[in-house]
Image (cartoon, rainbow, N blue to C red):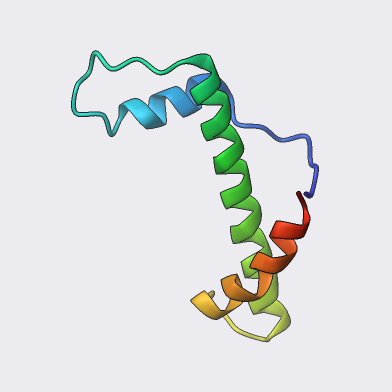
Length: 78
C-alpha cells in the first residue's frame, strides 16, 4: 500500500466512532481503534486512487466505475 507515514490517531478514531454511538457509555478497546484506523486508511487510499483514475480518464467526477478499476490493485497491496 502507498506508505505516506500518515496515520489516523486513536483519539480521532475514537471521537468519530462515539459521534455515531447511541449509548454514550459505549467503550471501544485499543485493538478496535487500531483496526478502525487501518480500515479508514484503506478507505482513503481507495478514494485517492479512484480520483487519480478519474483524472486519468479525463473525468471531473469519480463514479463507481473508477472505484471498481482500482479495487484489484488495492487487494494486491496486501
